[in-house]
Length: 123
Image (cartoon, rainbow, N blue to C red; front, side):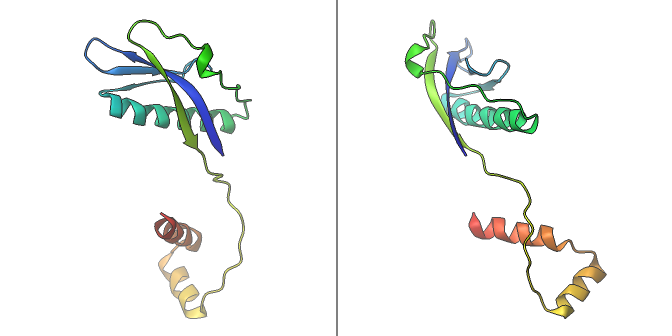
């Protein structure tokens, strides 16, 4: 799922940035440079949305960037994130019996191995 929320970037005295989200009170982050602040804005937004989803709280609608009037050296920017559905699904897979026997013997979690292999392959 894709989410886009406006963030306000406040320039600090030390040239770092504090990032706030008008629609998400409490979602705050900081970046040491503008590049780092952009990265941190995406990270904090992702974590906040995942938290709200986990708690089954309704997500507020994002404000229009046109209605946000930052003060001083602050500016507004839209932050886009994509959150993938991490819910587990059952799949039937087939492997040779000797592999299954050896995996059981070594205590290997086949679901974890498959997930790790797919993550590497799909990355």
